Image (cartoon, rainbow, N blue to C red; front, side):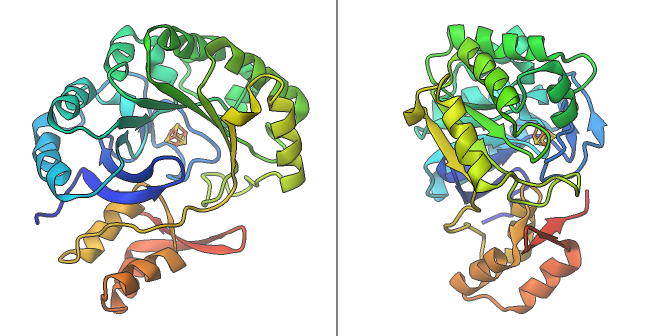
Length: 312
Ligand code: SF4
């Protein structure tokens, strides 16, 4: 099987089961620069759509991957924000017509203010957006968006999308100690969620090394209390707390284990334990770990050792 550049996994996802990923944006083009981002600081803060890659090249890989890999969701993702990719609509249409697994995207949601992006994403089954703030001030502190994006426009885009979208909107609320983990902010986030009525809300804490080293998760007591406050705005059976690292199997190409592991590491840091587990499960040589170590840097976060991809 040829080595893929854009398609990776399936990887275990805390929300999507075995997720076959399609990476459509190079490191790191985003319209946000979140303090907790696991990809590091945003090097290219942009808000216009770009044709980063020819869609035909990505489709060529997808044609093979959807036939040969066992997955629960086909998920569009980026080494940044996937809705900034001008070829996304074409890929979504291809995936609708050529495979029958549900389609998801992990987006921050800021581009939903754009009518074309809303039309593309309305073909999906699950659209995961973020709402980490309930006010302009906290939005600027935690997400550090492109200057064109205001908090009101951001929520308005998701609200407009809700009106036309019959699939599921899942919201991720990333809680950072001392930034948005207070009751007042959660009430304001609750107000924002009431405007677009997500089907699920995931209350998350940073579990992987963040862009800013001072970012810390709230304590579990604070988290439980905030979930209680949020349940005044969103039915509690729609709220899920995720404060752990995913467990499960990462799929790699045994003929090219180093590059397959790197394509996953470009998207998310892995713990040293997870990399060793992949090596053991696939009966590979442990010296692969040394190769991976030489291409990544080791970062300790919350007492756990992670390997973080550091190249372009
Ligand atoms: S967490 Fe997502 S939205 Fe935020 S900076 Fe990273 S890639 Fe962009």
